[in-house]
Length: 455
Ligand SMILES: [Zn+2]
Ligand SMILES: [Zn+2]
Image (cartoon, rainbow, N blue to C red; front, side, top):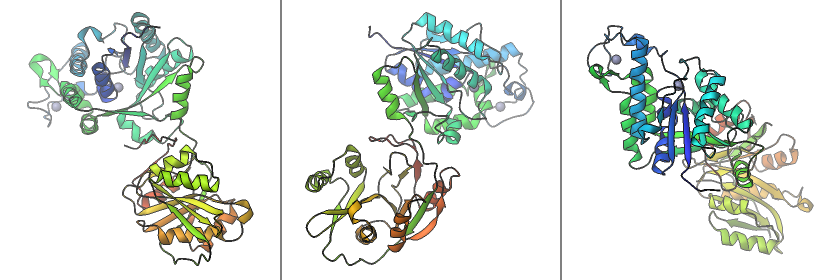
């Protein structure tokens, strides 16, 4: 094995995709000292801007009028200059900016030709190269050339011809598909421009907005997708995820993949209930235990004393801002326990939504457990009421249960919660319910050391 400079090959469908979809990563890879190549796979000739430039009108993007009748070749040349300027601004060396002779006509990139182009550069720049391109699964409005390139990379990966692909999601499509684990199979990495990378990025964007007809510069990129450039400039981040050949993955790669996997969203509908306040029930000789967020050592003590397994998951819950509550008998036996999440993002369970609650005055009660031999004694209801009465901060408490869990539903109603409805993830009703309840965002990803997907 050699640990030489890592080579990264960015294959982009059109002039501007290297910037709008992959720019932050390109810039970041260059700064990390990687050997970065950018390869343009079509000629960009079909853009409607060629017509705009000769329509005799004026526009707000530049001085002068649209009186420029460009031949297809002139138009392609002008676009290529914008592309080269952008790559250069991102830090890519001139010799590493490639415009292959065999590139396709804009709109007609075939999977086959895309495969040829990828294989060609892969064979030149070595088998340790990471192929970067756009994911082919970014929804129905994705450009067909983008899909073709993504499919080509995917084919080559599955055939074992290339080892590793980083797939990108166009930032302007990300919002439409971010919740779909079928389209984005693992939690995407969000790369943000930091520090002086921003200056390079702005310089790259400028390459698509230069208006200087004497120098064959017509701000074609900017005319074409003005709002995409503006939005990109505001956010300056890229979305991507890595895929490896499933048959050749190393143990390390498998662990990463597993760790980032979206966990299945509960398809089943849930019964949701809420309550704003209630009176403290008479606990008699029972004791109420409250372990606040962050108090991990108290929680460890509790687990030791009550013979409860100490799990990383529960420690992480405390760290994420959830608090632990329990009812114990007069002789210290644990009867019933549960969790309250508020003030920070948290994740309900491994197969559930995570709710981001920084701004919310609503809290969620979750993962309640009453010891089997003590069920039916009303401890669950007593604990729920005690939490609502003693927790500080939230104005409203939400709890939910699966429809077949009738005993939980009974306990919840008995504690005074009102039934808010049967809500389903499939039709988005859970989401809209939680938004109404004031949650800032709802993310679908949970792992122990939780990656948050919502920016
Ligand atoms: Zn494109
Ligand atoms: Zn114009």
